Length: 238
Image 1 (cartoon, one colour):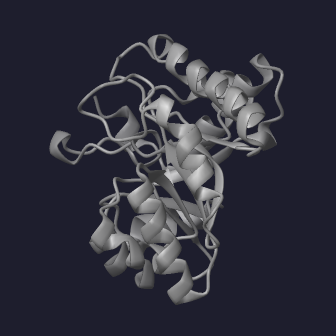
Image 2: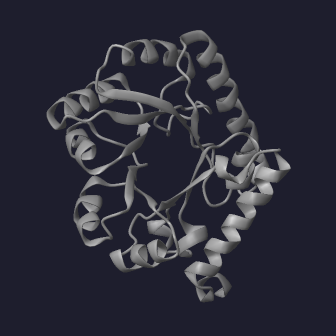
């Protein structure tokens, strides 16, 4: 099908914003409670400039090397966030390039971010990636290890734990993802009471399931295909 490809970026963005508004209304939330992150992996600076011209400001990248090459070629007012798996030897570069990291999955990465913050003089907001489904193929903290990770993070000067992120099991039916989004929100409420961390941000929901995520409390949705159009399968993006 070519219908999505024939639509302009502006048209796709309008449709996405309308869906966000409807999902928020359905959940008794204000649309302003949900922020849209454009997942721009493999998109060209020209495509990003088009998205920026339509009013988008926050973009998410999966790979450090690609972001390092791309960001200087894009409008300077944009905000960049890391949404892909982060290796420890790439952390210092990530601290330099990004305004937030969504995918912190170990205490080792927390320590490396703190060290990178000391070098750059920055305090880095981060989200802890939680493996809610328990899938061995996924990165992320096991839920039972999170209180200890939060206690450790409390000792770091250059790390701000802003909230949590998760990716549910792959499914074509977004309703099947909802229990995993709900579980993350429930964990958040539990850990908030247990640790004193506010954990206000919940990064959950991608192109195929963001409406379900919003209904379960998402504050960030990471959207690629639904905005930029479908790409080749081997380049599939969030």
